[in-house]
Length: 427
Image (tube, rainbow, N blue to C red; front, side, top):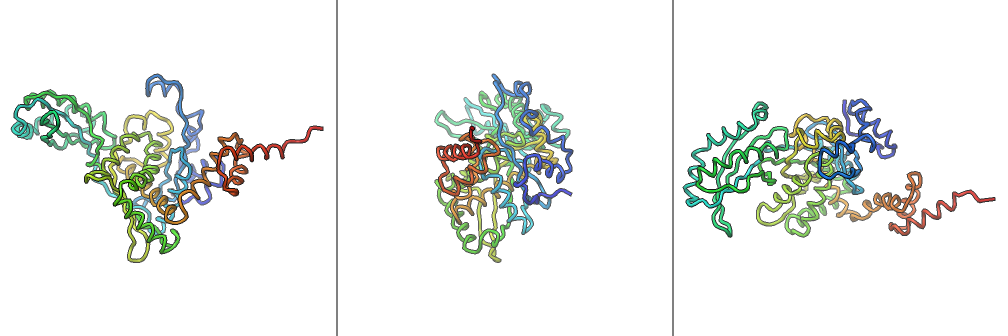
């Protein structure tokens, strides 16, 4: 039985952690061998993924623990360079675990392709003609991807907008496509390009842009959880988190940082699974500004019993089919660790991690301040950047934290002292 409650995982070395994850997920240990830097993405594989390849960039990949999502324990691979993200999300998930973990819902797996029509002499009448031809156009779209249709996906709706712009009224056609377990960019872009000539003919104009929209508001994921009052630190901490949440809901300056905290968690899982981080982040930011003002994507409220209820709604265009998710060996291993089979399940996990990470940041801000925990974990990075070897990092980090001098130059001094004290005297 899979469990995400791996107490003390951080105290093990890398091989020990890997062994515990393999045992918990039931994966053969050799399936996690690709997590070694030398066994992951090869230069040859990288050379087929992008242009002008010179090498590969390593990013630390950790595992978030304690997550229960829709009643299922999930160990969550997270790729990030920022200290405290994995630990904070795992700790927040532990606080939610006491009340059943995270519950999610979604609006489906529909992506939108946009076809821009210009030089249309009668935009209003053209919009009517396009709507009348909807059945023909949807059928033409489905002809472009019979495999997607065979899996239950395909074109679902056609909508037409008359859009006033500084160059005149443009006719914008939205094609709604159920992309199932794919992220969907290739599928909807192919359909948009195939439809453009026919749409331009019907409208009596000219097609220019024909591409998906990253404002994936037909692909929303919602996550909610109750975080335990006592584990958070008491009633006062709960009240202050609610105040912090209200601040982010009302002020765009605070909302930008608040949402960045959400994306710390979301982007880490998106990257680990080989999905498009830029598309997801663009979608989230556009959703935050959907009412004309930039606002928080999450909300925290106090429950009648004094605990903290958190909710989050985000658009998540992620998939398990195609792209780097299939091409990158580490992304494939990450999906196996998650134990998911569908893009819907992946979106549920990602939204839950975003909410957990957000709660952890709000708690730190409302309680002891963000720097205390963050800089303690960051001290290990500072020690390593000062030249500390793996067996020296813990000593240097603990010293610079204890003396509250978490700076590279002081870490170098501590390291020099350590090496001087352990170097045998020359006779």
